[in-house]
Image (tube, rainbow, N blue to C red):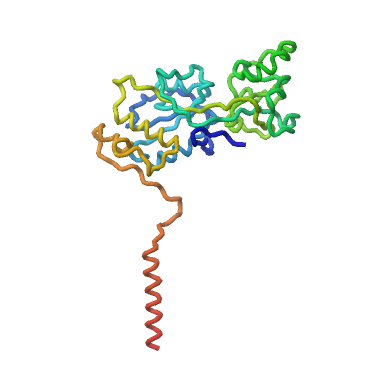
Length: 300
């Protein structure tokens, strides 16, 4: 089972670092001094970060910041990050289009997390109606499709949600047999345990993942900083190095406006242990050996 891409993009398949608070002690400088990108749990952006390092790592280093769930907007407002990879549906304060730019990167399928010995593991995919009489460890308003399917049952069997700080606490309660949870597939993978598994839930829409950053109010952001942000947008959307934004829109040229000495983006790194092909010199050596062999033959 894989996530459903949107616009040709797919979710990276590298592991994400552990969660961390969006708060930062140091003052966040402009992107031209180094780009800082936050990401919420389950989103795995290592592939994009590696591509940035290959292209612009020597001129504009990138600092990744692992955020707590639902804190992407907060991180942007508090200047903990220049950009954030987040799930807009899960944010405590959903990103307003008048305040933020947002680019849809991909969509994730919703899955139900359940113990490995649960009867529903017999199904490859679970219709939402099959969950109508299950106790979900989340507010029904956050999963309206299940709320509609279970309304009658919940009216006759009311249960109070246990205290939970975050999804991690909910996963612990699923493992304890208290209830189930519906989460994006990447979140279920992020909280992987041997005693738990997941199944895609039918009849529920995919959950979007966006790249979000603050809009320029027309006075604060320098053009070279905007160019750097757009370069990361291009990488996240799959733009190749050969199809860069051009001489007026690269992270390299953004340094011109800051008065720095011009530098080239970092060259693409070869894989460790891989030597240059040396095809020309190899051919010459082989040719020289043949020549010496032929000469010795004539002397004999």
